[in-house]
Length: 340
Image (cartoon, rainbow, N blue to C red):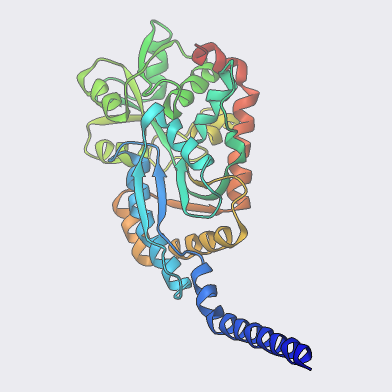
């Protein structure tokens, strides 16, 4: 009888413990669930340029609204604050590597310039990560590039070509191997221009060289060039896109180069690590969609002369990979100028 009583006591105790565990789990379940809601902590946006550049300004304008709409969409979340981290080292490659190797949990995102894919196209040794494997969240818009001359130097594109046939012209092409430079290379080859590409550390130095008269023409994004064109400091010769919004200035497609018009533009892209988890992927894209419907954000974008043309998720990825394919198709041309 004693042994039977002891067995019953042990069984009863185990049942009580098990029941208590179930009760505690049930009571804590909502709390645990709340902690797992994305976003539960701060999000870092890794910007590959120094503060003040075009990508940096666009990111700093956009990210507060991403934070706003994430928090409105997920009121029970414990995080969602977005901070900018400028990582321009190694010409931006460190920023891309940081995003690529981060956990795919939605707490590290970044911006991206498609022209960086040309680095691997011309390199003898491939990088340790594949640009095409990023999760592409957003194509925020397209910045049109424009060919500029100092006021009074050339009247238009045809006037520049007349002199181009007589002597070699100097073209400020910005950073070696980066977006502006790649654009200059492709246009030079396609248009068979008699020009020498001269690299400068950045877009600001590019423009300063043109103002001093050190070069004949230069390339710039419309956001920065627009006010200077309006002020009469520069003459726009051609807009590098399918269409031109500048009166009397042709687009590159108007000049007969429709095939390359799309890849000469600067796509403003935001990325996340490869194989981003579904919950953050869905919520980030949904929040971005709300941002581009937000009148306050659209007003801020107008102030920085940025015209949003958003593509989300798969649509953004498809567009950017077309640009990658176009670069690969012209790999031999790029190697001619960029292989070191």
